[in-house]
Image (cartoon, helix red, strand yellow):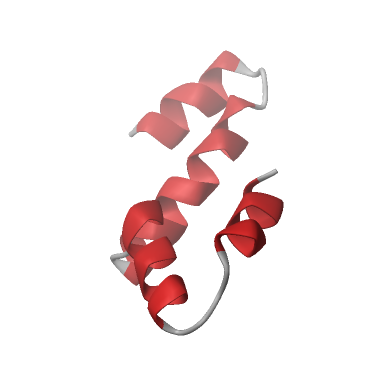
Length: 52
């Protein structure tokens, strides 16, 4: 519904919903993704670079 409503507005804002769809598919919040990455040996600096 949100996607359809934003498309009707015509400002291209629906692209901002893409990360939410990805999170819903993977069932991982950014915090959980970071926690799992750090557990697997990824550094905090890696996450800072990927989010910037």
